[in-house]
Length: 240
Image (cartoon, rainbow, N blue to C red; front, top):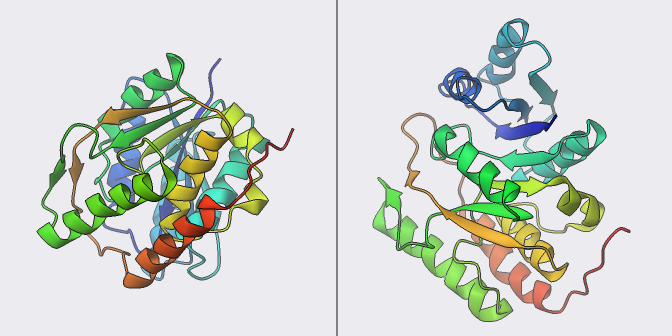
């Protein structure tokens, strides 16, 4: 039987965590959830713990001390997923910018042959709702920059709504992933590509968060800008 895990990193997501958890568990397809909380002072982790008796063996929590970065959260989640024998592993935000209803679409893309499916904002025009125009332009041209520098034919390289098959995560040396902010998303996709895996973009509509506060900052984009240049000169190898 297929095992599917949705990893949701959190920091101060008390307004969203209960609703997003119930939305995922309300789907016809069965998904487990691993929340990775970086010491949220607003009680996010406590909210997850309060729901765990309702969803035994489906809702899991990893608590970390301090804000350690998006990339390190996902890497910890990937290792946890491999240890617990999951077949499909998803990245998703807690704030409903990624629609839970799109999870089965990403899953089906991998069932049909993709090794990595991407919930893409830009493969079918620009599908973003309620984002400031400046943020859209930065995000869109960041992906164009990645395609230009790396010759990488993915339209949404910074997307944080994805599904990895187990074989991809087993093949990548997770301890050698170097970028920790949103550049992590670029590095993981490009590494998947360089190792010869099949990537498919699935068009989705990205909706800006209604509750809580964005974690985006200028330093995140700075890491991604210089990190992409470094990626161009990296050598990639599988763990096998």
